[in-house]
Length: 135
Image 1 (tube, helix red, strand yellow):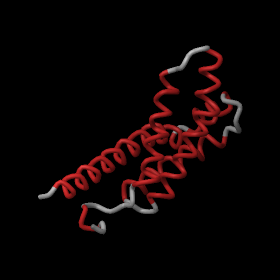
Image 2 (cartoon, rainbow, N blue to C red):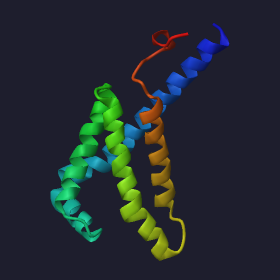
Image 3 (tube, rainbow, N blue to C red):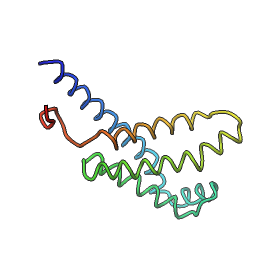
Image 4 (cartoon, rainbow, N blue to C red):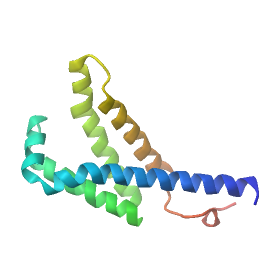
């Protein structure tokens, strides 16, 4: 086994792990919004958004996460989740940090999720193993 093969295997494993973490995070946050409609509606109204967006956002997070897990339209699904987390940063986290005059843990967390999702959009081609790559 040469170093190029080992590097490709490590990259594949890293992307797989990142994919699973992103799926877990969006399922964890999306399922309550998709299931508990009154709560998600109230929450989004509290952010100054139309309440129905909470339900739609939750459903989209769940569907996109399942698509990523099944490797079905995974690049588009990651792109959708990228826009959702960017919206959360712009609408919730940055205003919250500005009003508190400090960087919140939520902002830091969401920025990490944003970067993880961006990496998946850019580099996760849905292949498993270096045999699918050109060498």
